[in-house]
Amino acid sequence: MFKYAEGHKDWAASTATEWLGFLVSGGVVGITEAPVLLATVVVIVATFAQILWLKLRGRKIDTMLWISLGLVTVLGGATIYFHSESFIKWKPTVLYWVMGCALLLGQLVFKKNGIKSLMGSQMALPDPVWRIVNFSWVGFFTVMGFLNLWVAFNFSTSTWVNFKLFGGLGLMLVFVLAQAVYLNKHIKLDTTP
Image (cartoon, rainbow, N blue to C red; front, top):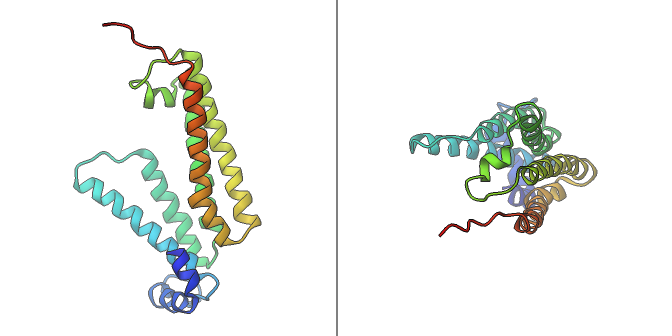
């Protein structure tokens, strides 16, 4: 939505004013903020739709999806009301840091390794390796949070959107592949017949 609206700014501004005018401060959306406001609405609606779909199918909704819904609704709502993309640009960082903190607190306070809980049934690893993997994810989420802020507030919104879509996904893929190489050295093979 952002890329389409960015390429059609007059349409985006008039559509955003028509649809969102009652939600925004002043009632009028300008051509510079319209693309991000429309994209924000799409993200909020899509997240609500995803939760509704899971509920209707009787599926369990992950805590992180609820957190994401809360963040996108609050920060997205502030973005829409104040005509400022600054709020929605914080959402990935907050989500990364919440995930990192959850893994860190789980390990240090509750003595529960979150990554082992997620992947332990799929592979056997020594506990020290699970700790390294868990802490590496904490580090990754921390760095990604800071990297998101750096791109968000030092480059154009268009560049940030591209980074969020492609850069973040690419860095996650590289990180997961590096972890796979590391884990491959430590996996305990089941030798029972």
